[in-house]
Amino acid sequence: MKQKNSEKHIPNKIRRGIYILPNIFTSLNIFCGFYVIISSINGKFAAAGVSILIAVIFDSLDGKIARATNTTSKFGVEYDSLADLISFGLAPGLMVYLWALKPLGRIGWLAAFLFLICGALRLARFNTQTGSVDSNYFVGLPIPAGAGMNAVIVLFCHRFGMNDNINPILIFIIMNTLSFLMVSTIKYNSFKKPELFRKMKFNVLVGAVMIFIFIAAEPSIALFVMGLTYVISGPLGALKHFKNTKQNIIDTHKTR
Image 1 (cartoon, rainbow, N blue to C red):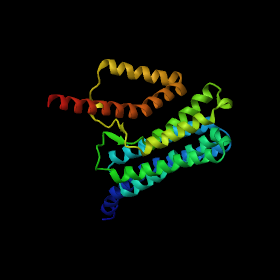
Image 2 (image 1 turned 90 degrees about the vertical axis):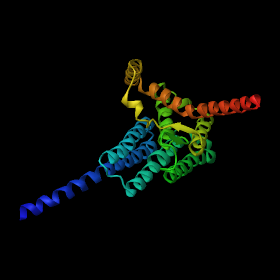
Image 3 (image 1 turned 120 degrees about the vertical axis):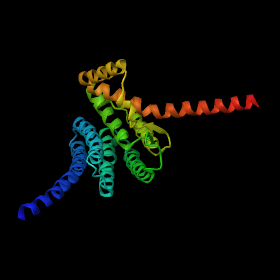
Image 4 (image 1 turned 30 degrees about the vertical axis):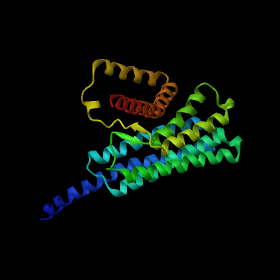
């Protein structure tokens, strides 16, 4: 009888263990964000940039693990949002302020605060729109992408020894642009289409391998190019959609 009772409790223990797993990755995300803050205060901006990119990896893993193990919960969603606000809102804002915006004084830290508040608004909007919008696209620039762009800019400048010649005005413009893109209604590809991973043409596979080689050879340059490409893909897609819509209206009037 004792053996049977102990066997009944095994599934419950396993289930609780699996439930904890995605939240561990979320906690690691927060740890990386906190380390970004500490590194930035100590002037170690390259380490802070790398930590943001690692936090992006943990952020992408916790959701996938939760769905794979069927352990998604409202608690996990809220915990993940709080982690994202720290790692991708507060941490990169402080990093960029201490790295480049501090000479601008009040305008500099206000730009960092704007990035934080826009990130919070972006997360709140995402949580309220879950299930009501097309999952193939993000409405507005995702906050991990905005934080990642800040990180790769820091790493790119560090790679070419430009940290002592940073133009605060240029970084100020970039920060405000990223803030605007996060709260905009511009659509960004979420890369969640299953067909993207089910079948792949040979030339696409070769291109993907070449990209991985590029990242391994020059990570700061490769990640900067990839991040910049993704950030500008939204406005370019919106411009293309606007032109197509305008052309369709013109064609409709001509047929009449």
